[in-house]
Length: 442
Image (tube, rainbow, N blue to C red):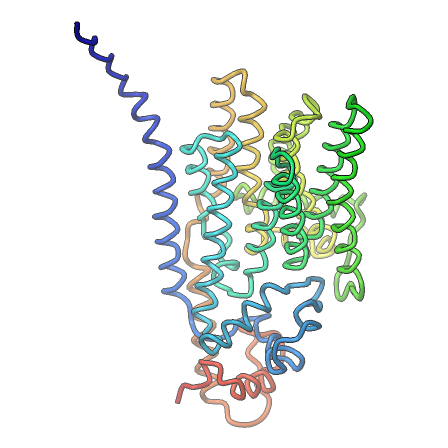
């Protein structure tokens, strides 16, 4: 007696299985192409705030803890300063290498985000489709400027932090995962100012989730749960307190959270995450609802569900980070909300919203597919005219023109506003003393 031949699987099932790896491979290919574009337009010359690293007390004085943890405007950017110091040692602070390493950090963020999305339920094909949107040059300032590694690092810390904090692993493994998540969030706060609201929001969501879980438990079990919660909250609170010591507002013009101007900036920041560079509070409100509604609904449906809180926490962290930007930049108006570097902070809203809708509508497969496709289509529409390389070309042109002026300069004051807001004389002398690569040209 022979076994009956297996029924052939329908072609649609095979295509569905292949779509996920194909989409993720396409993202990887797009990343490599974007990296080549970034390198092709990179020029070995510091740009804007990168010159400040050559100020007294910075790179010229070597690696010092007070410099690493010190303020840059309203930010603490310890990992970015450490990156600059390491590149000074490895390759004389070659700016092309800095831009390349920063884009590779963006690649790490992209990989971590896509891995998190798929592990939390979003199909790989859908995750890949959203990953392609994240490769848009709309955030060219964060890719053409090595200094902007701080943005990628803060977002990477958020993804890893949420992944660890809301772990369901038992016993010691769970405790280690939570400790790792808390550490990642603390590092994020010391990477970029947006990491501070990320830390506060994520830990608050974690505490609320653990509080919901403690209800109905035996007293001993509830006590252990609360001790585990305190083991996360207390170190994070201490790290946050240390972050605030010596902090100065600088030239920030903080808006009022009740003022319409602040909300107008926030709504325009949110719509920038969907690719829209037109100023429209109504469009921003639509985008905000697409992000906020499923996150809140997930938690309201089951306050004890770790995955619901995890997805909601990431969405809320991204929104509170943008809210902090809106408060700090309210005086500059909603037009400033469309600045390229803020797109990097807002773009992750789109795939996170898609994941929230996917989980919320799990019992209605057709509806969730339609809603997630709609979210992707809206963002694709917004980003449709944001694939130009003009931003990279402009920065390259400014750098090359500045190099020519620096080469012609002999004595006296020198200012090139296209690459730096201040005088370059002392910065150039410090660069020459350090043997920075661009000063070696004849």
